[in-house]
Image (cartoon, rainbow, N blue to C red; front, side, top):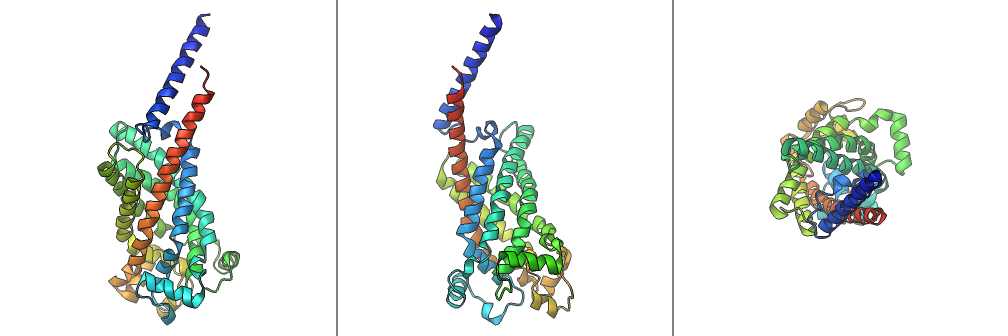
Length: 336
């Protein structure tokens, strides 16, 4: 009888806790503190949807950026601005040409961003508990973003190689599968990870700056961490712009390693394939000087601002929606 009473008390206490959590969530007070109690699938689902939308909506601008970063572009692929580039590509190559390579990007973006956001939330929360007793820590945000990037890039790097080769002017590949087969046959499977170290060297500082800027903006615009779509959009756009501008030189090197631009490499008498971040830096500098490291900077910033704004607003919405649904389901299933 005593054991039964103890179980009844424990059940009632658990039910009370669930009701309090849902009540707090409904008033938005518990929004930021709830995800640790929700399954990791919430972060993964929200991250996957955010990642696919982020890459899809602004993909034509990404195609322009890849072309503008070409070190020795064809005369027919030299552009003064993003708008002029898009207009000319559509007029001369067809309306769907700016979307070439989108399918592989979507295939990679879903799982890559699912891992990315799930890892970020877990590492951020764990480090914040240790460093700031659960309060926001810029150091924890930066480390969490960097760790998440390692997983993200491991999935996304092969997709980036295929995507950028299909985006280039006069790309010789008939389609996605033809590109994968040709690269594997001529360069080996290692070609898909030739730029991985450069990608990490770029994306680790990119994501560290990105997350620190986002969280800093949220502290100013949304100090109580309620679900406010406007603040997520503004914070995401600012984070994207700052991190994109800072890391453009590394992005130029990554593009060279991914595309193995034949004309540029031939002019430098480079036989075989270019590999390694140091070699990429030397090649870019010899071909265009310091200014070459900022080729495509305008397109990169224009691409990243709305992309990160979309990613964060979609992610925060799905995190809010899915966490609320999870708590409601838990309350329904809890015995009274």
